[in-house]
Image (tube, rainbow, N blue to C red; front, side, top):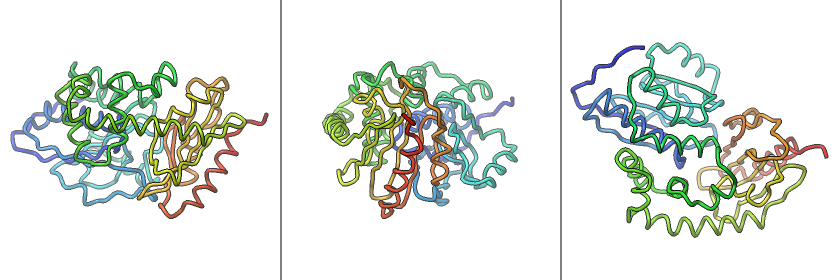
Length: 329
């Protein structure tokens, strides 16, 4: 353990966070409060969402701060990267990247693939190593842990969206303007979840997002095919780029796995997940399966990102993954 002396000069910090992800946004907010409290109280912080794409390459021009941090996303062996926190099994793009991380002596880069959420991981590390704890963040940390760890009471809890945290999750996952998501990050450093959901600007975003959510629920209900423990559906051509990952289990509680295909302007995506309430337990490591196709994730959930024009390849990979996951009966 070592102590840090707050720097007096104005620092510029760039935080790259997992975009359109409640845990990624929460991680950015928690790290911001830590940085202001322990490193540079007057720091100017800028935020950049980072998304999984084909090849997963970073835009190195994004590291434009005096210090640069990545939270809830893959490692980058750039010497300008000064802070890193991740909890994904597929944290490294290459063996060389992993070796670069292991050789780091800064004491400011951390990985724990057993942590259910990156937000909880950051909060734990900054408390243990840098003596920072903020009780105002406790609710946010708890909900990031529930959401990213899929620690829900039931599929209905996360599909019916009755809590402020789950409503905000929908806004974060559905919002296409990074500047507005940055506004949410800044809100999370100052307000409670209930206060944020009660704000007029969030209400204005939430109403159409909830309408789209329930339309998506109906589309997934109609397109889902359940066979031998796997539910699958193809959302290409619907205009739906993302969806609440627990909708399939809402209609098919009997399955163990879900595999879906979607398409956006920047990728064709195969999403793979496992049902936390499945009557038959998960027997596959999903991250390992996705890694074979150039993707990654956790043992319980993962994804593969291809180029947007690689739709037929995505369909092929989808079929192969479904067949691998199906039970023998």
